[in-house]
Amino acid sequence: MSYIKERQLIEDTFVLAFSTGLQTEVPDDEVMESFVEFVVARQKYDQSVDSKFKFNERFIYSCFPLFINRLQKEAKSGKAY
Image (cartoon, rainbow, N blue to C red; front, top):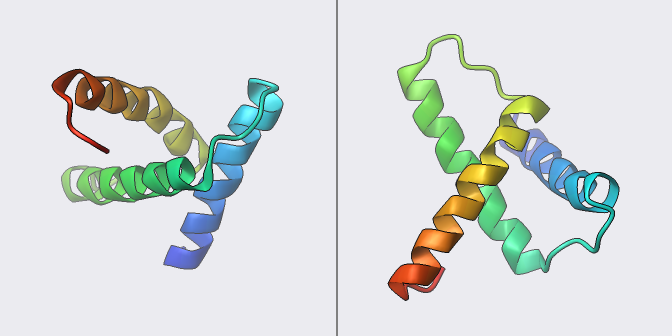
């Protein structure tokens, strides 16, 4: 899958998670961009340690709690995200 298609899948999944799953407004574009960057970085790491890694919606959804945890840790440390 090309980077553009991967990015589109991440963005689509992000929007669906909030608009359909949580039935709420989608966060700002800056938040979505941070999430995209987080997922891409996580994907690269997981691919490097797991030869059977599959990039799909399930993987993207699994990144949500990790992303939120990271935001919380950075907020507590006073580090801007």
